[in-house]
Image 1 (cartoon, rainbow, N blue to C red):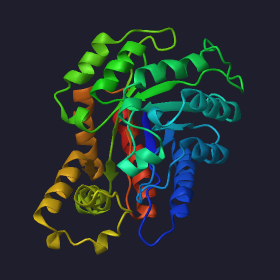
Image 2 (image 1 turned 120 degrees about the vertical axis):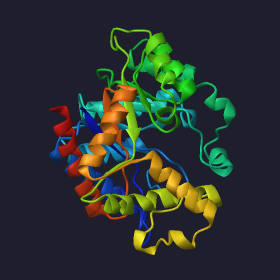
Image 3 (image 1 turned 120 degrees about the horizontal axis):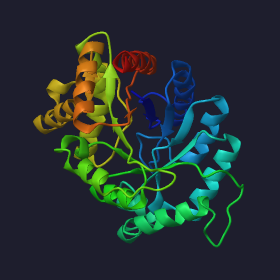
Image 4 (image 1 turned 135 degrees about the vertical axis):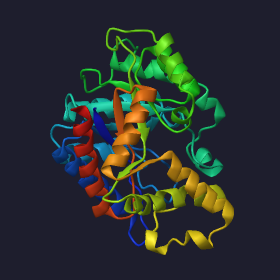
Length: 324
């Protein structure tokens, strides 16, 4: 089983935002030592709980501290940019770290209306995703009227896909990264993607990467405790409209929270894979049987950085045992 990591540079209460970026780089260094296949970073704008607003800049730092592991974006949101700019940024990364760079792209808009206004984006930009994707590919394929520099071998492109994104990816002959509602569905969306996939020379077969939160710990209770800060933040964002930094789990009193908040926390925990190594292995085997992924991208986060690194180590060991 190919296993990779997505790190969203989560901020934490009591720490400056810069510490989140430093932690991302340190986690990438550790992930390479552990043997992870790739390490991706995210793009979020104006969100208190996430420090990463520029994947290309962060990837330059990650690439400088690593030497062999693939690095990439999970993902760059095309509605926020001119495709030419994205092509130039990732061509530069590919020139600096040849053969290691992935271009993960998505179509999500800013989290709030003020953020969308600051980015000069609206619903109409999201609707041009398929055209923007074609334009981006044309720069890498050297078929556009303008030639990007530096000249590099085209880095692979991945589509972070919802239902509509799956259709765009199938038509374009590109691999997809899926999570959330698609994983909770009956699997028909992935079947449609594979059935309607149009092969290309570069991507002759459909390829699916499954992304989800995975937390491994010595006990099920410990895994739940580590996962609660992320679930709590998600629940708070639904209540307040603002996605907050991670909170120390010792400071979270679920019992005193409103019933609706508790329900949201439990629902979020239920959608994640968490538990002891044996419990996580069992859940992953069921997920693999249901979705038949080519790769799993773990998007785990927790308040305790050391515990996060320990969980990464346990997860890669578990993946190797499943592969055998």
